[in-house]
Amino acid sequence: MEKDLLQLEAEIVLALKSVYDPEIPVNIYDLGLIYEVDIDDYNNVDIKMTLTAPNCPVADDLLRDAKVAVANIEDTGKVTVELVFEPPWDKNMMSEEAQLELGFL
Image (cartoon, rainbow, N blue to C red):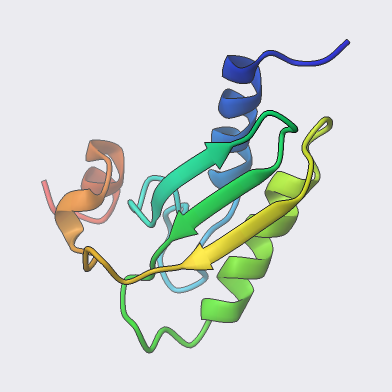
């Protein structure tokens, strides 16, 4: 049985929350690095994400890990992850939980 869109979106969020920046003990979703997740009619997933800094040494790893985590979800089609820098990331994009974890609140 195919998943409905809301269920698939929830699973994508959970998958993205399983990916951590090795330098920061918070997942990429709660860090606010995921700007957009689009799912088309064929369950192809396009993700726009950013980095905490443009020269992040683990950029390739984070992009790959995000793509693999989402691609491993049953019923997803093609997964693409695009790196964007607009708008620039700042700490206000983090979830309240992440801000607490990192001592910003």
